[in-house]
Amino acid sequence: MEELNCETVFTIPIFGGIQISESVVVTWVIMAVLTLLSICLVRNLKVENPGRKQQVLELAVGGLYGFFEDLIGKEQKRYIPYLISVAIYVGVANLIGLLGVKPPTKDLNATAALAIMSILLIEYAGFHKKGLKGFIKGFAEPVAIIAPINVLEVFIKPLSLCMRLFGNVLGAFVVMELIKLVAAPIVPIPFSLYFDIFDGLIQAYVFVFLTALFLKESVE
Image (cartoon, rainbow, N blue to C red):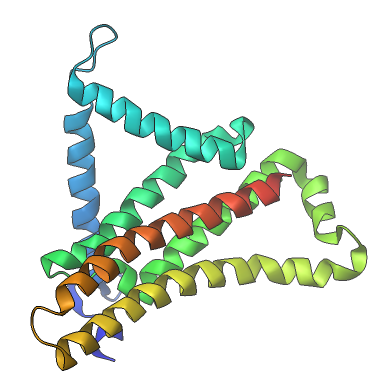
């Protein structure tokens, strides 16, 4: 239960006091590090005779673009930078626990914010593609009688994304703590490789994969 509590790091003295939790501060640190890393990686790029660093970077970015284009189609590639950004953030947020820092994704508020942003993008993509009339008409497809279910689905999707990410990250933490309590010091190491690294990356993949599928469904 202590892990579910969001500790307040400091308070901004405006509007009656805005409490800044640990997960928000860690997120700011992740954002700053990723931003500085991005600036360093894209310096001195060349059109001709690119260096090894640039080739690896282009291969990685091209691979991610290709993966998401296959999922949502070339017509929706304008949303790919968001999907890549979220994938990188969630992946780093899940792995940062290896440094002894509480992962932001262990905070229900953080996962809820990610889910709400993704669903807003998904609904905007559908509205942008179909227009107002087509967007509203989509709730009555394939038959008008299921319109209430389709409306309810708009709220179910972010809840599903939020609880899936939060539950898996918190569940992995609980399992690791139990293993540390009942097993010898060396035994938890292979489990840590799975729950802290592999499972953390898998959860990042699942989150953006489901977001991409929902987005594709919204624009079809």
